[in-house]
Image 1 (tube, rainbow, N blue to C red):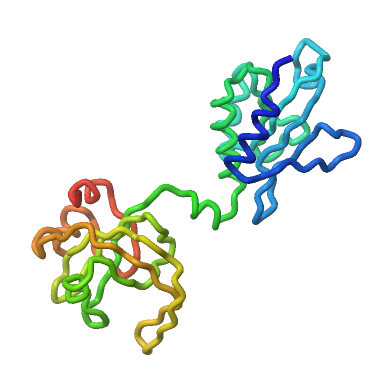
Image 2 (image 1 turned 90 degrees about the horizontal axis):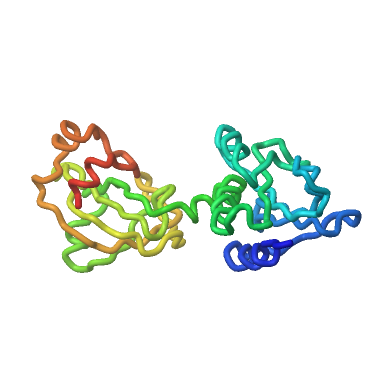
Length: 248
């Protein structure tokens, strides 16, 4: 009978850098795949009699158990052909998917990715999340960013919590400017940098590259508050879609 087992193993190896672990002597066909950092399982491949899944056959079939984050989604999926409640691992929204071609391989890959993210550590989720846009404050009292960008198009900046390489940051320059002046791309993060002058403390910095300049009257403190609901920029923060569009 057709089985995606070998194809799935190769896909997991290439995509997630994980190898199968065979943990039980009495069921040598069961293979676990887990995260390298938190050691949590994100997939369990099994070979079981079809009757154990409610199929009208005792022929051995390959399945993969994956975890979905939303219990409602698990309920919806298990109403579809080829999907079942997790075999011997039903707690925590685990489901079983047939590997015999009933479910397309691309569809299996989609739910494998869902499981990988649902079981990932906070650090892994942060590393894999899509690029994000932030507003970050720049206080002329502590650093003259206007002068810095007049000389260079890439500068070091205090590392913002949650910010990663590839993110976009908009620099809000505080009084007397009180406006967003720069759009930048984060090109490097987690650069060791110890600094403490009693008012500003840094343990790491990031590099940001200038992409665009704005006129001082375009995105002022008053405009940000009145039109976009942003009334303070005290630290890194996300931005509403309406402001994101305007900043483009």
